[in-house]
Image (cartoon, rainbow, N blue to C red; front, side):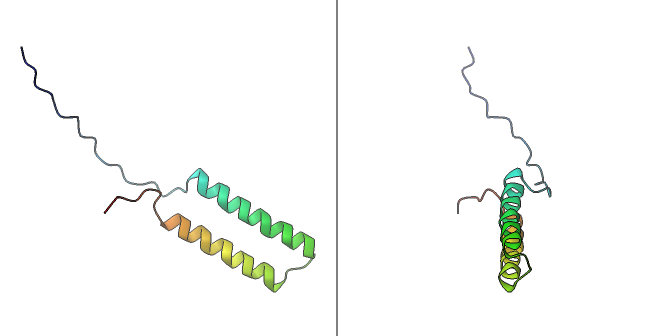
Length: 73
């Protein structure tokens, strides 16, 4: 009787997709909606709205570049 336990089959790692995740889209859409509400409320494009847009773009870029999972050291 053979009682040897076989090792689990190795699955090759796939390349990460360049398409943003649904979570990324949800965050960006929510932030842009907040900027649009502020713009509509103020009725004109102001310096504060420009600063908000810079924040939204920066956050979107950083969130896109940072992987969802990080390996433990």
